[in-house]
Length: 47
Image (cartoon, rainbow, N blue to C red; front, side, top):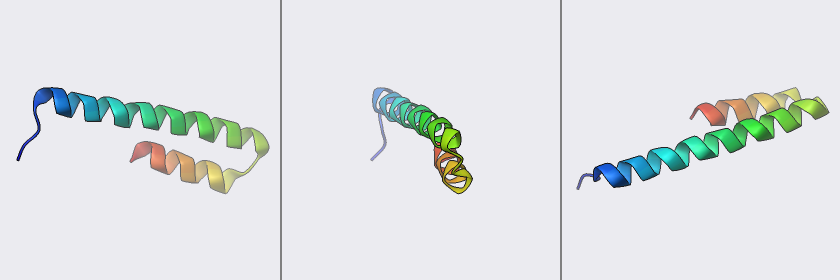
C-alpha cells in the first residue's frame, strides 16, 4: 500500500513541525547549560 500525495504531505508537515518544536526545546535547554541534553534534542530534530 502506498501513500497518496496528500497523506505524504501531511506526514512531512508533521515531521517538520515536530523538528521545529524540538529545536525550540534545545534552545531552552541551552540557556540552562545542559549541553548533553542540547545535543540529544538536536540529534532528534534531525531525525
